[in-house]
Image 1: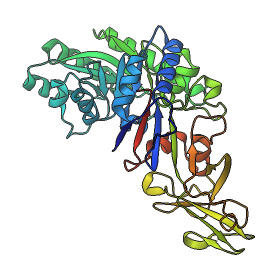
Image 2: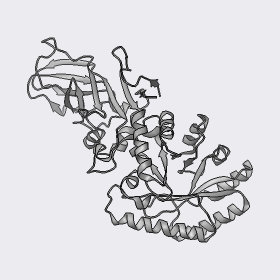
Image 3: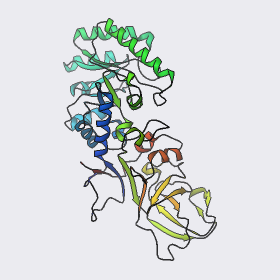
Length: 391
């Protein structure tokens, strides 16, 4: 993925790539500072998996740490190793493993490992081979139904973990779980998960474990449920300035979206009434008009089904018409003979979403694609260069 550093504010002579996801690292810092204050006295883990939700893992990780995050979280060991290769020394937790995960490399690099149960003997063996003590976080499934030990197996897991601690192969640094419905703060299931988590921690402590950190809260829990904070919160979406709640905007939550997705209009042409647009010809113009071509498509990460998504050109927001193709999409400018009159918009900036008051939001694109804002930013593809402001 191409990385481009840029000035804090674009100058008149600055040329951005013809397509770019512009990332404001000051927005990342602002969001992290805000979340650190909300979570205190709990500490903050900045979740930077999936290339920092499409924003770029190394610039985001560094900005988050500068702003007060004390931990980093990723899904895969390979993601954690990339952070260590960049000489980032803080605690890093990788929590999603398979039987082929490189536990030895993780232990050698002082990476914390999530453990649902089956991993424990593999981690212990790798630690013995490395002649190091592995740092693990035991995961209890409190209701989400994904990874994590079941409550019925939990007592056995903590007993085995205590034995592994006694042998010197592991140390249980943390106990954690994950919330299922924290984006709906009044759901009783979150209360049930907090109770189940508290019980699981008590069982572990009674077995002789002394975890340094208990962590349960995601972004939604961090923002709305102080009872989920415990010792450490894991914030992902919110550090990128996006809201996890259907009825609250980023601004409502004191967050600043960090990504702007923009390109340039590449074609502009006058067409008659009845002109079909894009594959399937599902859209036809109802009157003579001008069409503009936007050179971003599903190969760039724009969902193919997001017809109607907003694109802002020259201060006006237009919906995408017709199907989104691999490399391009079309907007109908709604005015006839613009090209003939000499007012073509070829070369004008086209902004799909951004943080400005007049910009369309990531949430609007998520609605057009019948998905969530997490997916929209995370799927922006590597062929769209990232440009960094306020490095």
